[in-house]
Length: 198
Image 1 (tube, helix red, strand yellow):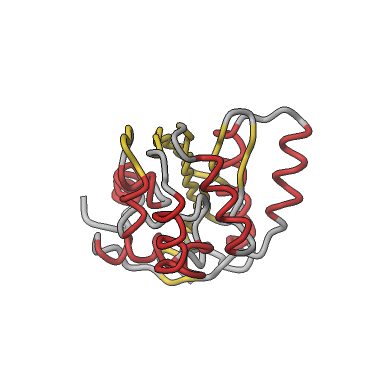
Image 2: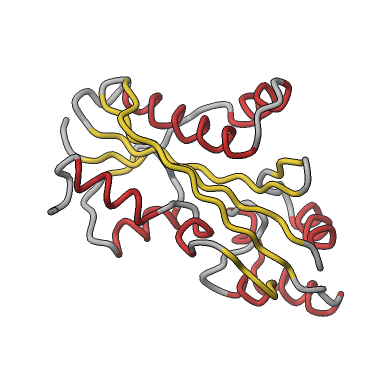
């Protein structure tokens, strides 16, 4: 089947593509992200390579079951010092993470990969630098109460397009990268592949 396939269940990535007028269907990839990240860290891979590899592996996995289709894989990782942070499992873990990030800078890396018939045709990695303000205990508890389990769906526990913007003092980088997909380079690549009008 031809056309664009998004190899991600991410609501944020789907919203971005839909808002930009990109036709696509979703076929989420099922890969062992934790195991792949652990292997890459053991090999000393930097955060940019980890995000790029995750995006590529998602696209390759879906490409195998979508012959002829252009498959877009995307992934984001949060780098805090030398540590790579994944999505939190529960609110208690998220509370602890936000307490650690409070008043400090972390890096959010979002990667995209386009694959057709098992061959990567294009990839891009974007990085944003986010400085979190010092969060008061009262604010943090209210934030967790208001956001609830939805905060667990994003790496870092924040939806920057919503209440999560209140967490930050300063942000450097592309907003789309923060939302999980370096959209402008993706759109340029999709024009090059004839998926959207040039």
